Each structure stands twice: as structure tokens, then as C-alpha cells.
Amino acid sequence: MRALILFACLSVGCLAQRPKPCTSPPLLTGSLSVASQSEKLMAYAKYSYDALGKRIRLREFGSYNNKTFHFDVLLLFRERVMYKINYKNQTCCKKPLSADFHPMEIPRNASLLGQVVVGSSSGPGQGLLVNSWWGELQMKKGPAKYMSTVTEFGCIPVSTLFHASSGWMVTNFFNNVIGLVDPQQLIPPRFCEGAQLEERLDEEPETFFTLF
Amino acid sequence: MRALILFACLSVGCLAQRPKPCTSPPLLTGSLSVASQSEKLMAYAKYSYDALGKRIRLREFGSYNNKTFHFDVLLLFRERVMYKINYKNQTCCKKPLSADFHPMEIPRNASLLGQVVVGSSSGPGQGLLVNSWWGELQMKKGPAKYMSTVTEFGCIPVSTLFHASSGWMVTNFFNNVIGLVDPQQLIPPRFCEGAQLEERLDEEPETFFTLF
Image 1: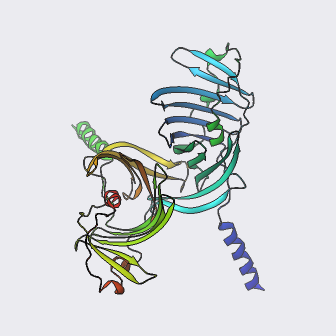
Image 2: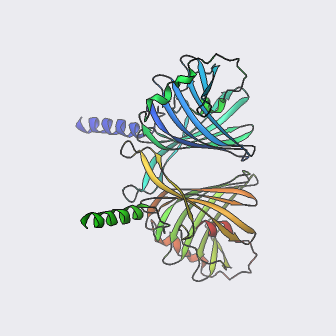
Image 3: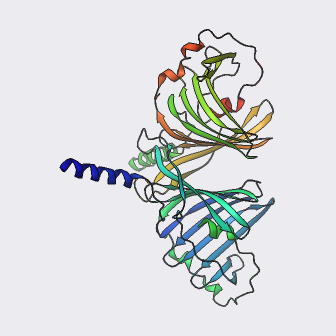
């Protein structure tokens, strides 16, 4: 009987060891880089992420078609508005936001690609245990495949590879910390107060919504 | 005077903190994946690396131009020979190897791109401190740029991005362990003993030599 219980416990323990789709911590601050296969898009961004308040701030710069760009957006999904912020000119552009908030997570229907150690498990501080998942998403422009890697401990995003008809795009996350380093980043700056809601121009950065 | 000494010690300490080009451990075993920008080449390999004996074993499979391939090579740089091994048919192809052995290292003249945490530094086991370096290499086909990422602790390879005229190629290393898991991998199998040295056909996998 005791052996049976031990066996049952061990098998449950073993089953529990298999990585499961997970949700990242609700508050995160960090950096990310984005690169497209065609080298058309290369960008670097600092982000603040609040899944409790459904808010994302992105301060991004990079190049698109060999032209540099800079943008600073605050996405407030609950209020369904998006602010494009220009600190230099102290101007603000307020636009409707139709997309739904997607928490940073591995979808329930994702398939486990594998678990690997980045670096080495031979010494302390030399390696990081990560899980890679893949799946398909139904996008406006048709189905797209994704491959997402998160840490085994903490479900911290590491990288996302997104493959659509236009080729693939890779996002690498780094310098993530749990929590909000500056919560004020998620509040519209004072000079945004008077901003009028503008017409939507169908130029929402869909890629970022899908990434998160 | 004491303050001056303290200041001197602190500044030396701070200078010492700046990441320096490093050499990976002389014995490594692990896996790697290679992908080219064009998606022409996608490969996965298990490697054994011995910088003391200047030997590398690569067992690789993947696809090139939508055709799958498999190869198993043992590179003995001291003896300047390379074995192409086929376990299934128990055949062996012995070829001259003209390339020099390149240890896995960050070249002395590489420039530091930055130090980041992959994952998060907020909790134990959630992050990995890595240094990224870049530089130029003079290749047969002209200059090529590289970006190489290694762990801060242990100088374990994480990824290498290699940019030549044909586009870029990315190698990701994972499941590395310090030491040789199976030292026999670096000795030609018995059925290779009778193999005759064949003519060189200029088809050496230059990319791997440059990666290491």
C-alpha cells in the first residue's frame, strides 16, 4: 500500500514536472529589440507593462526602410485610448484603441517545443532554464505561426518569433524586472490632458498587441 | 592619503568590472542551432569541443534549400584531417583539413555592445547575465561582421550572429556543459582506421570554423 502511494505521488510529481503554458508576472518593466527578416524593421524599446490595469507604455526607436523613427505610446486598453506622446514638443495625440488587451502569456493551446538551458548548467550564474512553445494565431491577414520562449522559473519573456506571410519577426526581451520601475510611465503626462480624441487611421501597431 | 588609496582602489575595482573579451572553457559539450536569413539553411547539431587537443566533433542534421541533410564530422586540427563519418553504413571519409583551429573566444579587438540580463534579475533562476560583442573578420569572400553573446560568468557561448554579403546567419548555443560528456566522440571510430586520405574538394564548412 505504502509503495502504491509512493508510486502515485512520484508519478504526480513527474507529471507536474512537465512545463505548462504560463502567464508572465502582471507587472513588468524591461527592454526589447525587434528585427524583421528583411531587415526593414529594426527597433529597440523600453516597456512598462501592467496587466492589472491593462496598460502598456512603449518608448521605441529604430529604423524602418532605412529611415529612423522614434515613438512613444501609452496604450490604455480599459479606456480604449492610445496616446502618442512627444515630450520634445510637449504634444500629445489621443486616438481610439480598438484592440483587446492580451496578457503576456503562453496560450493554453500552445505546444511545447522543448526545454533547454541557455548558457551552461555547469556553474552558478552560467545558465538559464527556458521553455520554448509554438502555435498558430489567426490574424487579420491570415494564420501566423509563433515560437515563444519564456524562463522556466517566473515565466519571464525571453524571445518571440512570429512568422506571417511577410516573413518572420523576432523580438528579444532583456533587462526585465518584476514590478513597475516608474508607475508614472503608465499615466498620461500633464500636457496630454487637453488632447482631443482623433479619428482612427487604421495604423495601430498590431504587431505589438500580438506580441504581448 | 587614506581617502586617495580608497579612491584608487575603487576606481581600479570599477575598471575591473568592465567586461573583457574572454575565452570559453577548453572542454565543452552541447547543442547548437543554425539558421540563415534566407531560411535556406536550418540545422541543429550536437557538438563536442576540445581546445586542448584542438578537436571538434559535430553531428548535425537540418535542411539546405529544402533538402534535408545529415552529417557527422570529426575535425582533428593538429593532425590536419577531417573525418566524415557514416555510422549506418560504417563508412568513413578522411580528408585533409587546411583550416587552423580557432578557439571559442571573443577576439581581443572586439567591441563591447552591451551587457544585459536575459530573463529577469528579480528572482533566483530567472535571469542570465550576458555580454554582447561585435567586430569584423576578414574572410576569403570579403569582410564580415559578427555579433557574439557569451555569459558574463564562465564565458559560455550563447549566440553568434554572422553578417556577410550573403546575408546573416545566426547560431544559438544551448545545453552546454563544461567538460566532455563522451570523450570517445573525439576519437575516430574503429571503421575509420583503414580510410585513405582523399583529395580536398574545397568544401570545408568554413562557417563552422569561423563560428568557433
